[in-house]
Image (cartoon, rainbow, N blue to C red):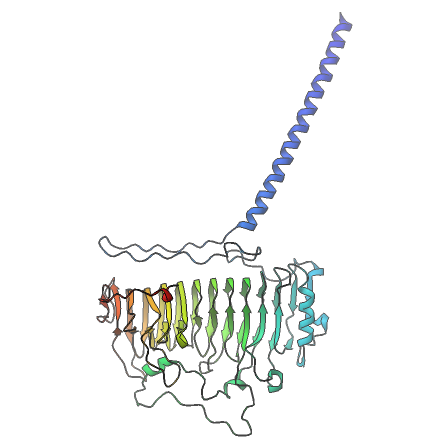
Length: 519
């Protein structure tokens, strides 16, 4: 009986042990499977993650006309070709976490960094090496000055997510021989995916040698026609003729200091761009642009030195930067949509402008532009839309909000008769403007608070003004009252000064855009 009980007990123990072991393996397998699935799901979500911004909702009293709704600030492209960087998670400073095999210091490729030796070939060699590895870093180290001629850091065969770590100083050559007959850009990045330029360094165009050679036919800002000094002397003085010995010292074509073309997910942060030959920072045909914490610095009288220029680009965020230049702090041109500009200090300069659009009878399309939380200091214009006569296309969905004007000559401008030369032909066609909204524009002006000059054949529609508070400061110029021409819309609140010239409702003709005007 005892033996039988012992054998039974042994048998039951073995069976129980086998069942327990089987359950442990199944449990472990399930946990492992679940972990792997979770890992893949998390990884995939990182690739598919979109950047979202939360814009402010604007509520109005019952009975009033609701304001147009604007989409939130731009996200990264819906189907970006790579992971890229997002504004909510900007790339961290430094390069300590980059594998040493992925770091390419320009000094290791022969760059001297003494400010005298031409380091262009060393930069080309360092880029060629960095181009071959994904997430590589090309380093321009601090405490060095690198003289670099015109250069293109180009794809499309480069790997993705390359970082150009700029902590030193890059200077441009100032001899005419380096530029040949003239070039459109100095430092160029083309056809790249996930390119980041960051650091504490400086790009110095040393543009004064170009500015003094400004030719007679260089374009002038047409808003000068509205600014008449009290002594009635004209502001438009042609450039002083150069001595024959200096004539043609530099090419008439002036380069942009830093240009990005045909690229996806471009990030610029931390750097300073100064004294550009012409435009400082330009984006052409780019998708997914993020610019933050940069400085642009050039004298207020340096000709045509726009701060940041965008054209044919979409999903752009420009924020938290200081821009001082001789032209528009931010210039938004045709083909731009979903552009969000905020927390910018602008001045000196010509303000933040959309256009000029429609030059030489071209079609221009701009939509969904938001400019908010901006300080303008001693600028020619504040927020401006400018178009040439004879163009087609449209500007739709523009929102200017919370702009502080400090001694700005012309705070609010729409000019559909723009002309940057002495003679422009009168034409009836025009770029159509609609859904242009101004809210919380406050501060002081020195010439005219509001200038809204719209086309006779294509009047501006749905122009709204809310909480406009602008006070005059009599200084050196004739003062003028608000001006409107063929501008239709609505005042949501009383304004200072009163803007009685705005016409309520729709134009009588209410011309419908032709097919060639549609965007």
